[in-house]
Length: 173
Image (cartoon, rainbow, N blue to C red; front, side):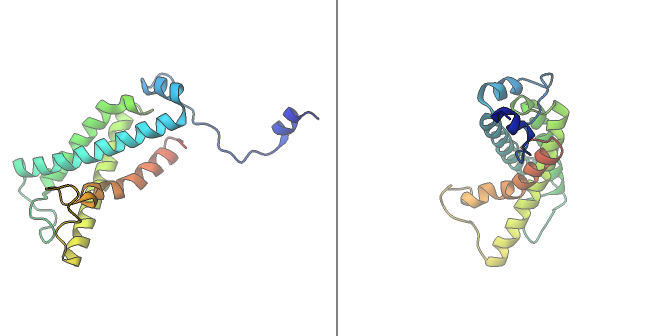
């Protein structure tokens, strides 16, 4: 048999390339132009942007409308209203930025909401670790923002969930 027929008969252990339907949005064009590496970079950029903006907006919503503290022993400024406002805002932002992803707008909003919720858990978890260790900030690299780990604490929890959501629900990667 020829080499081609042998290749067709041999079992393949590689996962097939993700199927992206062209009706979803403009990211399909970017995906086709740059391949899987471009899609991965766009998804990472989308995740970081959505989670970081959610964290900022949670603080803003807490300042504007906050009444009920989420974890008074850990943070005197994080409120339930702020978390709800930040998560809702992340959903809107995720839908607006859905053109960066292979998701439809409602799918992107849902994924953004899940990532924002996990990001909130990440921030509170790292706050608990800091309070337990008696540390105010995790460094001075980002002056006035508590250090680099304080900037990415939400991403530490949101990124693994985002990976599994995109892998299991959307069959990407």
